[in-house]
Length: 249
Length: 390
Image (cartoon, rainbow over all chains, first blue to last red; front, top):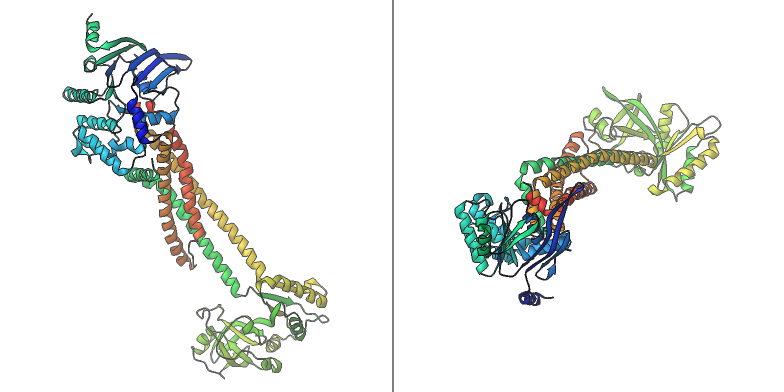
């Protein structure tokens, strides 16, 4: 399939972006089994801004790893943009992560020995893109997050907020189907947190699908839809208003 | 990820921690350097030995006979035998060597005086500086003519000598017929320290009537064995006992030297090779530490879409780069060391191309081989665990 045709197919795809069908994840610790996810069913459409909220041990990290194609479920089906990811091998998962998902981590996770531009261009390196094109796209992404002037700096020469913006640029550079943010404000002060969330909202309004994982209610309420997890099960799935009502009630 | 990028990345990592990279490389530098130096010096010594013995003539067969009252090897018969077998032998010359005191005026010294046939100088490719060699007439007439080596001219005549000058050998007066070209800086004990006289005269000086040793020259080094067999048969017919004659050639000696030095090279190379192995283990050790230190980095790369293969390449190429860089420096140091030590020991030694290629190839192979295990460990890391590590 040539590139043009593939783009057409992708554009034509109108079904739900994410379909989780009865996802179970079991960890084996010695002889005991630990159920991290206990039958999760979830659909997320393109263009949604969903927050997954839960305390530690609720299974939110496990579900994030599965959605982010870092891990596969023990049973159940995960369909991302029509593709069954749940049975993929390591290399196929790597391709999914590379092409379809943009990660934003709590600790930014920029490589300390690489300049910002190279950090941002890293996903493109692994998709085999030529140097000039990589550079061009990385600069575009940096302009989008407004730190293009810092492109030659090393991460430790940037503030926390700037580093996180760099990480956002890296997530955007491949033009992914899904942006997956894991506690993106966890290491930021409140002012920069607000700025980042505002920026994520803006990205969502531009048509990007965003899934945000957090334990913080105030952060989760910046999204349009909240999915609450407890003991590996979904205990709430609805709009922010509904969530507020439920929590109050 | 392309190979060029992997090399660039490896280069960054090596430069990123220069001290550690250097210490890791040091093992490889020493290993490769010592392999090249030892093999180079050994080759130099081998060449020196072979050259030295070749000067004595690889195409020569020496024969010594113990003449008895009833069984005698006659000179004329030997010449006849050589002529009959001209397909094998270029020629023959008696060579009767003894040590005598030689004198010119008041200066005297002791040297080897060899009684030879008229073909001796030609057969042994020895050139005259001036004058003539021992002639057939000298031999027939037992005329006291001699040819001097350049050392004697320097020592006894202060370098100034002309035809017709005389020299005393064991008290007898000899006329100098010619002087040999300098071959070996006119030093004592060298090929320049010699006198040639007619073999008939030499027999008289020694007080014997028969020639006890001959040098046969064969046409080609390949014919040495055939010549030896012919001589063995011929001499056995006359002497009727293997104890009364001896046939020897340089070929056997050279073969022995060759096999001995090859063995020595293998042993020395093996010992130096062990240091290459140790260097490889050092590289593996550092790479394993490096993988642990960079677990987080590996996790980040994997989360961004790096495949197993990409991580694998990154670490294998880093190990190979360190190894090859060390190997390259080792080659340079080994080269310099070989030449310097060679000069110190007076051996003309240069590293052989083979030893350089071998050492460099081994260093690259060791880098890849010993880099594989750490790289495999890195590539197999679970991205979730790797991301979580600090």
